[in-house]
Structures are given as C-alpha cells and as structure tokens.
Image (cartoon, rainbow, N blue to C red; front, side, top):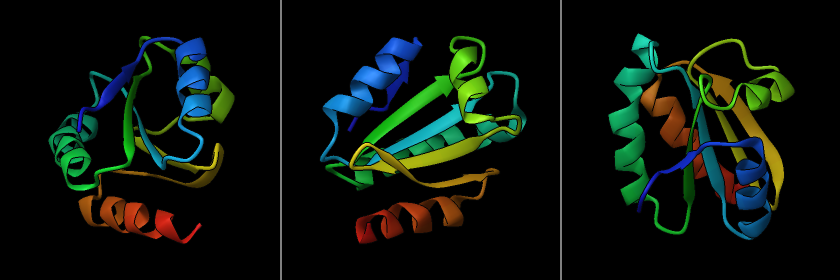
Length: 108
C-alpha cells in the first residue's frame, strides 16, 4: 500500500470523507524532526502490512493549518480515524505502540 502525502487542508478532509469505511492512520511530522525521520520507514512498512488501511503523511511545513486545528505541538503525532471520527491519538516515535494502536483500531 502507498502512504499518501497530504498537501492541503481540503485534500485531508476530502480523503477522510471518501475513506469513511476505511481505517485511517495519519502521521503529523516535520521534515527537520529526527524522531519523525526515524519512524517514517516503519510507518511505510506498516502500510504494506495492514492492507485495507489508509496511511497519510502530513508535514507541518506544508499544512500548518491542520496542525493548528488538531492542536499538535509535538512530533511525530499519530491520529487514527475510523468511520470519519478520531479514535486515538499519541505522539512519539514508538514502533510497538504504533502497531498496537493500529491493531486496536479494529475494535472501534
């Protein structure tokens, strides 16, 4: 599966609306963030492992308004959506927590 890069607020809302029945995992990151850069390869690997899930990558330098609207100040922050609603949020480059949160998303 491909990780989709979000480049505008409109694109984010459109993708979220169109993926109503699909679980969505979004990483909010900064290109200069060392922790973000360390977890990105694992995030991409998970996108191949979890078929039927949609993985989104959002960079603060490209879509600051989304960071503001979600109140994100720490990088990386992961937000997981299902049914169009936010189900989980956490920050930090913790691969085991990321995988556990994705697996738990099926419980919603």
